[in-house]
Image (tube, rainbow, N blue to C red; front, side, top):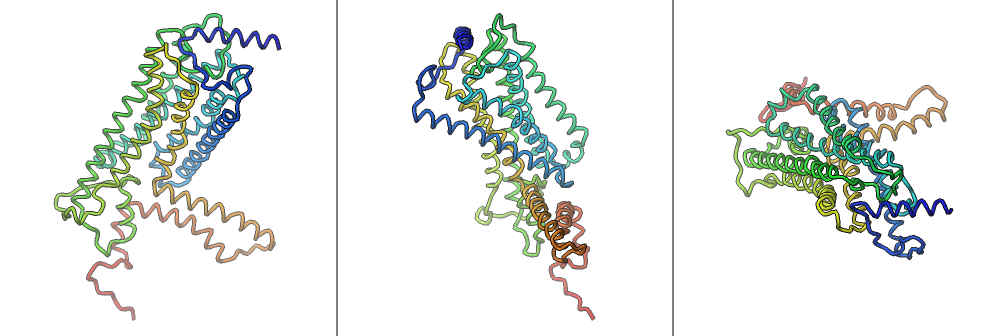
Length: 428
């Protein structure tokens, strides 16, 4: 016990000379003081929120990845799948370490210098990879909607692989700067888990890196995302003004694909000879594009603006005392992006959501079929069960064929398709 106390005393003395040391926000967190009921409730609710957010990130990202990989026609969402893979790595590696560093239940946890460097490296590396992928998704949507012909020509598998490789290389370069660019830490051999962050180093290199980290990972992506979705909104407004109301004989598949122009990334083509509608006849007028702009940009700013503003403030003003609760709040507000991204970029998409429902129905029907076959000990299958089981595969293939514009055009040549004014033939 005496050795542990001497170790903690030496550690506190070492950390008191750091350029930034967090200040406990409650007296109950002081050494030797019993926490109050309010402090215990706050600590318990805090660790419950962090664990729930971590579990949500694991489940949501895994679901989107499985759906995209199993459905062939959804593999065009390669960047969305890559974003979910990066966020899944954050849920496996980064967020559990964040729980250890943020929760007072692990206040006695001590990291070695190598362990703290690994945590800081993962923090910078995975955050940069997630934000860079979000920026790539925004640029891809811009070209898909605003320049569809150019997108079809240039957006190949090689370009997608090159963009993904560039994201990993740039993120790794930023992360390795925290490992090899930092100077030696003198005689310090350990550091408290609560104090392990970007601001525990004693060098001017830390200040330069923090400024570059904020500029490269937040300021530039925020400007790109805002500019891209503003242009998408302008194109959607022009399309809403120039496109007339759909005829009553338009098939339901065409109406569905048109209403999904922004969410499902269908191509918007504006023509000069399209019938114009007055402001009174336009029920939406680009409101869906405006909602997409507000949701995507708003979610990015709410999650990441406090985090980078906090680190930028600590970089410019090293003498300020910041409460621990504020540091943990902005950190987990940023980490919540890993759990929200699969919803905003994956599950809000109608195609991904429908395939997830089909996959869930397929897997929920299989245990019932297995139970009935083993219970009856018969090799024959119920005809209704056979139709229910095969409909999952048929619906998946049908959704793939219906999403193709060529198949939509070919519907006019089918015998069952009726053209307005056509007289139906009488069968003898």
